[in-house]
Image 1 (cartoon, rainbow, N blue to C red):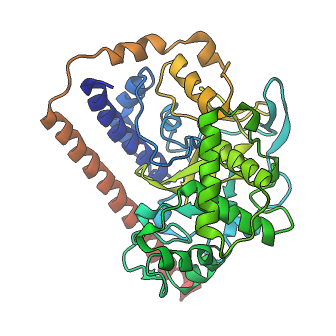
Image 2 (image 1 turned 90 degrees about the horizontal axis):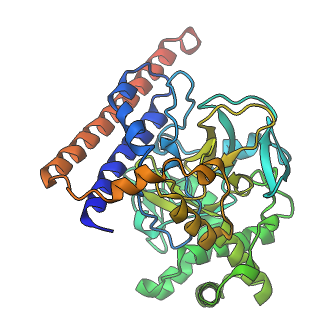
Amino acid sequence: MNTSSNVVNTHLRVLTTLRLHVVNNMRDFETDMFGVISSVDCVVNVTGLKTAHNPSELPQRSSCRAAILIQRCPSTNTQTPKNPSASRPNQRESTASRTMKTEGIEGTERFASPGKGRGLRALKHFKVGDLVFACPAYAYVLTVNERSSHCEFCFTRREGLSKCGKCKLAFYCDVDCQRGDWPMHKLECSAMCSYGENWTPSETVRLAARIITKQKTLMERTASERVLALSEFEAHLDKLDNEKRELNQTDIVALHHFYSKHLDFPDEEALTELFGQVNCNGFTIEDEELSHLGSAVFPDVALMNHSCSPNVIVTYKGTVAEVRAVQEIPPGDEIFTSYIDLLYPTEDRNERLRDSYFFTCDCNECSTRSKDKAKMEIRKTSTAPEPEEIRSMVRYAKNIIEEFRRAKHYKNILVCGVLWSSPLCS
């Protein structure tokens, strides 16, 4: 990619971060901030540049990075997730897990989608910003780069985390989080002590180890599998080329190498199937600033089919995925998400879909190619912005983000003050 494209990528990444903060933090505020960045819609909706890289080695489904820009969500309708660091949604057993049914998702149903296999469709009307459903992770891992700054169990970002007394590498909010994570952390704790700096399994391998552990201890479907069981995941092994087959085998060897003392493995065929399923159905968890936090599997979220004009996006609150409408969804309509970053021309998008998910998209956007010309034009831009202009944009972005954080903190103080002065508290 040329220098100009890289610079514009930087601009779009900054603007995307701003947009995500707007959507995630303006839940109860009437504001004119959308007017400040309304031009982002005009710019991003016609361009074809990727806004962020994916640090994970998995070809995992994109969350909100590009889809968040599809439609501006009015502050009056948007019921969006709060800052993941503001709470710990899966303390011991998450509230979502306790309250969710293990069969069905209210307002939706699984159905046979014409030409796409199974899918998810709406049974009621969803407005822009509505929460369609939430799904706790079936299994997840925190990326090693975020250790010491995030809790290993609930992904809360905070200072003063307590480290594991044995390996000294895993950090937790408190004893409750440490106990909650122990069934999974014990797979790695001793190994990290033994291997030291040589303990280097990929996130895919770590995630697979946790899935195997959970499958051995849970006999019933979980709150993550209300409409799709993890065992129903497609692996597409018959479509893998030699390179992908070799990568799968490398992961299997690493799994045996790093986890053999603490894990009883299924046979080779089952392991090959599992890694194929994880590679096709894994998700990257990102924070509100689009930083990669870890990898996870969300079976119910994986049921949704792809469209390059999605009507929902996926955001995260800790280790819970939240699916929210970005278009009006009437009853009977299929619910579509995007598996990839959308800021590419049609051919590039489909090349990525074929490589990672083994299909070609035939949505309206791919059929009409309505934005391809504008996306290709931006690639031809020869004049790059000056470095000082980029620095100015970054400073502006940081200031806006800090304003949102202060506003949110002030709102929390007001809420606490109202509750404290309430007659119920006196």
